Image (tube, rainbow over all chains, first blue to last red; front, side):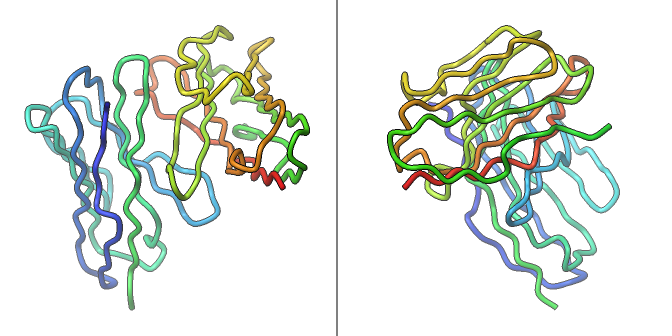
Length: 108
Length: 114
């Protein structure tokens, strides 16, 4: 199979930094995505990594290590509106596989 | 652009009935994806098309499910006959080649089969 693992839930405080990890099987890897999904809404694209390293986009950054089958999404200066599920997804050639998602709660 | 359009937004039907979900991708996008999302199984890729041609339908759960894309601006996902376990939110998404594969999701169709 092409299992993708993420923590189920995380909690953080407004203004803090949180790191959401994602591990995946490396065979056939073509790229990794992070999506944000608020309750009752559709997923929205956050980032895409295909090479090793850190991609920064405003308050959000995403890191990839292809040899380790590991990625993380870093959220800085957390805001209440960041409370959502964060989905890691991997492109395995002709197949896109989504992880179970991490539900992040941001507390005041 | 209006984004990806899906209809209906909500569908309640009885077991055994036929259900047809509709999707209009973003104009100019050459890939279209159908996903299903449930609490138990998360977001699952059912099938996707490239230039209206089905590329991978290995995620379609069984023969009761079928999908078509007769032209670049329209796709359907049909379930016949429907069963209670098909209850889920069905998303359609589209993207275009050379866009880093960023997928734009529609608002989804919440299907309830009683």
